[in-house]
Figure 1 (cartoon, rainbow, N blue to C red):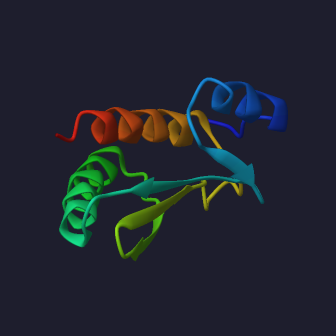
Figure 2: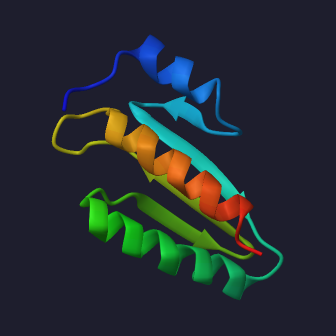
Length: 96
């Protein structure tokens, strides 16, 4: 699996809500009604990340979770990053 070009990354993100492409990473801030809802989301995310062996950087805050995907091995965004981001969006939408 190789790196996506900047235009390939942006074309994918144009079809996704609120993901941004910055410094060879894709980033999104997810919002929650309370802290524990964010933690529950992170726990589900962690299981998917382990299963796919693709682990995002996370920042957990009050009622929000920032998720950053990049391939540390390749130094940029791959199709696996996009696939993981799409999976998280589905989980987030269906969390209730």
